[in-house]
Length: 147
Image 1 (tube, one colour):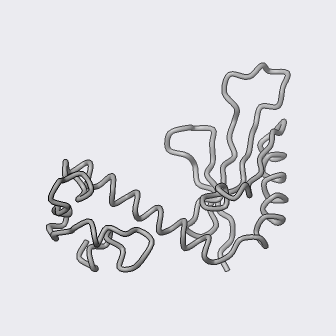
Image 2 (cartoon, helix red, strand yellow):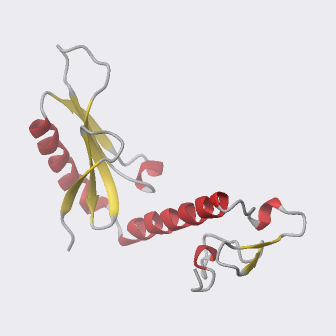
């Protein structure tokens, strides 16, 4: 079973993203722009799709260590409520988003934006609206295992 790991955020020097295996399950970071007499650290625990169901928790702490401990306690309470389908849905959404942004970066419109309903994937495979279902296999972002 995976364990929680922290990875330094590449855009915020005083923030750590927390992962359970390959799924981002929260963050711990220094609060920006707050007076010195209030808690300087914040943490959040939860991820999509749980957050859509209102299953997430977060808080403030005086120090990184306190924020880390509070996150750990929250995770122990949250983890039993997470099903394998939640992790799978998170991975599916991540893959869909990555495909969408790769298409955008390549200046290729998805078939939903063309009158013909047909387009070309960045990998060269022809795709259409019928195959662009993100809820049922085969997932279009893999273009039938081509890209």
